[in-house]
Length: 121
Image 1 (cartoon, rainbow, N blue to C red):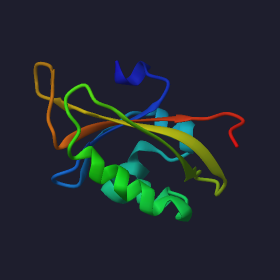
Image 2: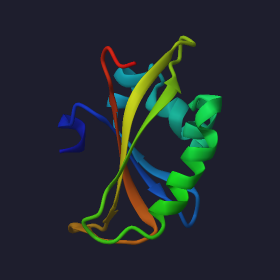
Image 3: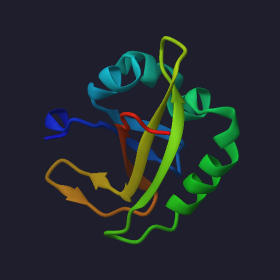
Image 4: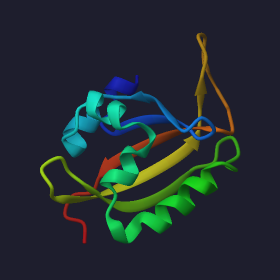
């Protein structure tokens, strides 16, 4: 299902500060391969985030730690494309965890969904 989603999906472990999963859509969204995102690791978004939005992004991540089951945060942020240009993206987080059988709720793991915004600002 994740590979059918038109948005970039990442699963972040906020406690261990690591990326658990990245779908291939991140390449069409930002121009970075899954391997490049995984190589950079948890700090990937901090590295591609517009400097003016660093503080609000860190607050957003901190707020994710207390998200309740079914809750979602949304924020529009500028991300640097692999070619150097900036793109406005809508970033959503929701609590998420997967085991070998099904998806379950977990406070410290979030699903991040990133969608590009066309003609924005």
